[in-house]
Length: 238
Image (cartoon, rainbow, N blue to C red; front, top):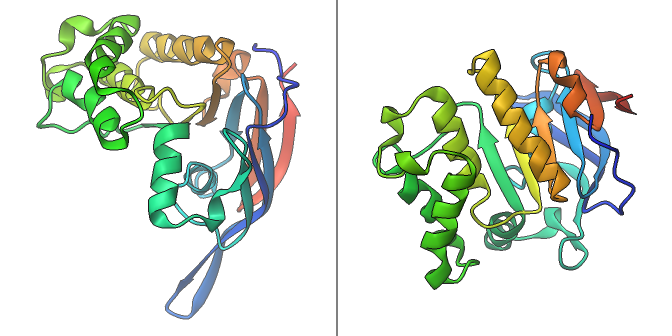
């Protein structure tokens, strides 16, 4: 189990809600959720299917916009990301957030190396002269440098997930959001991915992970449970 961080939160959500209106029917995906994320934390977002877990990390990662509430980023300066324009939000996301999806979402026509370089080229945060070296270093850290010239379809599921993690780390983000990243992996590969996340937390990165797998409890510093879009409990793992 990772220790719970006592550092001031790097991202704070305050009473955020997400309401959908479809055909005159109102559906509350999330209601008045508050959560603080501190450097070095490994937070598991848990709950049944449809409880709002993926909606929550999409809001926290700036992939979706809340209906109400605020999400305060303290990465460089204090910023309420719910007030940012789409362009400003994209810049904030590119600099501060890495996202790992269960389905990997690597671009199939690009090599593994090109997939890692792409976010660096899009966001222009890493100096151009350093990008290739950084991409290869990330792939080396994740033990798939020898696969760098292959297309994603030529890799195993575990290797694709490692490539997806490398891509998420390309711009050296403060927070990594992961939506069921071990759901399609065998037990051994899943443990390897979780070990990688744990190392990131020891490097003072924050990991926020949606999961159904409570067998991985030893990795989390805190769990945050949702049910029907409402926070049930947030507790340190002991």
